[in-house]
Image 1: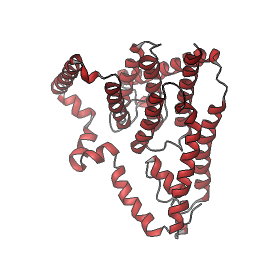
Image 2: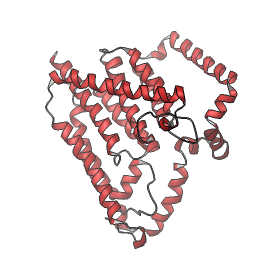
Image 3: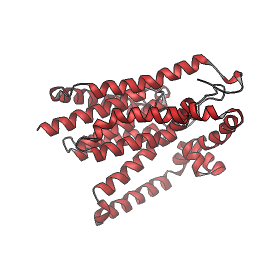
Image 4: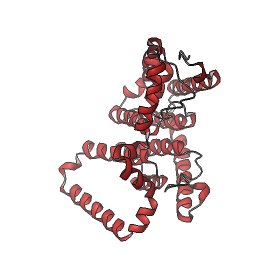
Length: 315
């Protein structure tokens, strides 16, 4: 795979492992795509999934209430991820869970909205910026989809929530600055973009220079990851480095074929948004296609939506 000039950068074991993760994610999505759409199993699958989501939310809440160190997302700043073992896994788990519960609560309107708000509040306690960014994007989608901007009550609610947040933050300045002190320091020293991307913008500039110095034309076409340099932690860029432009296009095209069936059914507007927002979040969170546990959560949620849509069409 690697075509770099410096052989010291190359480790075939890491490349084989990473290649295996890329194709495992693709094969998993392909397998979900060919599974039969048995509507009689949807309720069971959905119920089990919602119970699992609820249990994990409970562990996050317990960690936050009792300040349990082994449930923390980070040791140096605010965040609790419960029994989930990595912050990146927690991010994609809550992103996919919120998308599913939003779908059955607001799109299909077959489930209580209370559970959606409970998951959303719990997700805020995880403390990853990718989740916060996702929630802002989902809020924007909700506002424009349901045309809330045309309702006066929407602006009254925004004003009320804004004043509430400002008031609480002001009255608890010490707690606020203690909770987010690391992020505040990064923002003051490096600015908003670096804070939002957790230094990935600077990592991109620094690591890209190594590739510019060592890559040939063939690398740009077929890839050539330098293992000693590490990941960019930006999913599409990491994929480009591994596969090159040609490999990246082929991989995304075959993935598109896997999800094409979702886009041909009812509620394709929401599914399109869900796919795009996950890809967008992966720019800031990274490791989307090579973290198999995250892909399992995301793929399973899309499969449940597919089952739900199929059941709706039959009914």
